[in-house]
Amino acid sequence: MKASKRVKLGDAVVILILIMISFVPCYFLLSPKRESSNIIAIIKVNNHEVKRLPLSEDVVWKYQKDNKLNVIQVKNQRIRMIDANCQDQVCVKEGWKSKSEDTIVCLPHRFLVELRVENEK
Picture 1 (cartoon, rainbow, N blue to C red):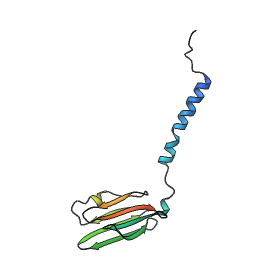
Picture 2: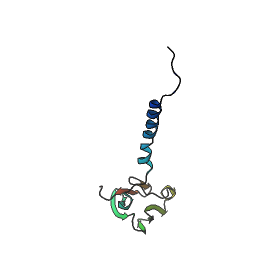
Picture 3: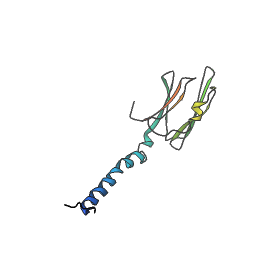
Picture 4: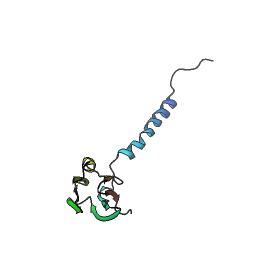
């Protein structure tokens, strides 16, 4: 018996369907989140909540206490630290954040910004 080296129509259809199915996770991973209008920034200092800022409103907010300064900017559904008087400036260099579960941390000041969907704790 001789084995056929030709691809049969049924095999080609199954291969094509499997290739198409393999791209389905990309749709969910790369599609923009529809929750962006419900995201809020929870700002904590020493693990105590001090402010909640919705990402839907453009604002600049300053926290200053005990010679520690942190300035937050919210613009276009994104948030970033624009100024801090800590030495390392890691928090300022992190740049814009916009997704739920993103964080901005200023370790020297024990300052934390957590992004969450508004209904979550």
